[in-house]
Amino acid sequence: MAKSNRIKIKLISSSKSKHYYTTTKNKRNTTSKLKLKKYDPIYGKHVMYEEKKIN
Image (cartoon, rainbow, N blue to C red; front, side):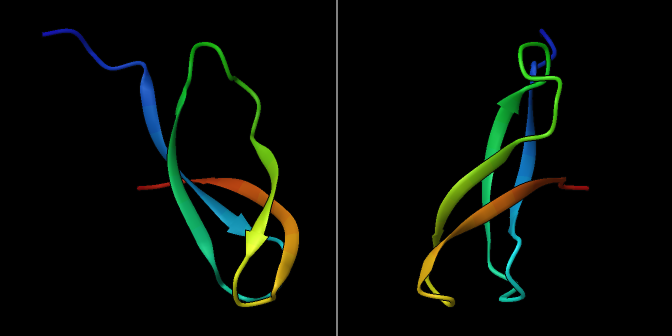
């Protein structure tokens, strides 16, 4: 069976709300860390989310 190219990651809010999204990314095509602007429901605004690897 082939090894998957996708890894699981957590997108953690840059605000201090402790909110996160989980997603996957292709480690071959996206070698740099993801930084996305997404909605934080605890903070009530769009904030930057940064990638952290799920162990």
